[in-house]
Image (cartoon, rainbow, N blue to C red; front, side, top):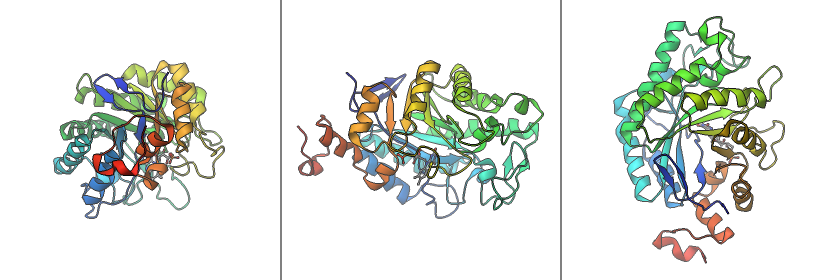
Length: 343
Ligand SMILES: Cc1cc2nc3c(=O)[nH]c(=O)nc-3n(C[C@H](O)[C@H](O)[C@H](O)COP(=O)(O)O)c2cc1C
């Protein structure tokens, strides 16, 4: 019987439990240099102290104009590696594994003078109209992803996640709403993502798994749905993705507030559909912060791993609290042992 506290292994990534902290932008870089600071260090290391199996560092961008805001993390320069390496080292010291989400915001880069995108279509009436990337620039963008992944590997991360969800650049190429190109990257809307996946793999050690976050459905008239995302996920798996992190939405908010079906576990059926139809391990996410519910998602084999976002913003020790509630064995820091009643 599997449960939230069963171990999990994929390639060289060995997790002590099935709890994932999903990427969550902190908008906390103070010097606009994309370099992680004390806030990031405390934020991620606390969740390791809190027993999380896998921590995924927030959206970290491949070029300055790929940031949502100037306060986001970046990996376009070697100067950005040491601060991340220190976070990795200290997270490891507390027994968690750590990945990083590599991204580009595309037309949702709010602080870029002129954002870039597959097609010159603004996000909404308050957003800048992006400039269409030339075919050569798209190829250059693949290279920027490759170099960011190389730096993430140098920083010592255990895994890499590509951000293919929530209306950011990879998603923009994937969606019929935002990709109106007539070149090779428009004729095949999966081409950009597939090239990024291959570029990432070329920089990663053989036994390091690659995660990819997708929006499994767009919740928008004229957008793609689960049947389409099953098809492109098959192509991504074929190109080298080992685990799919199944989110949804994207032409609106990052979290699906106000969208159809925001009840607890609202994205689990999408995760199950991808898992069953693509034959790939999946991470489920979205209002799974009730421990019994998260445990059931793993026990029922709807997903291999469960991510808890806002629940972990509220409680860095979410995983230890869940173990106590579910009466599971887990290692709690000696210093905190009197705060928990584990069997
Ligand atoms: C403050 C905040 C920042 C977020 N930033 C990111 C991000 O950088 N990358 C991403 O893929 N999702 C991001 N998300 C979405 C979360 O990873 C997660 O999918 C979402 O919050 C739903 O899970 P939950 O109900 O457990 O919070 C963010 C969510 C929040 C609340």
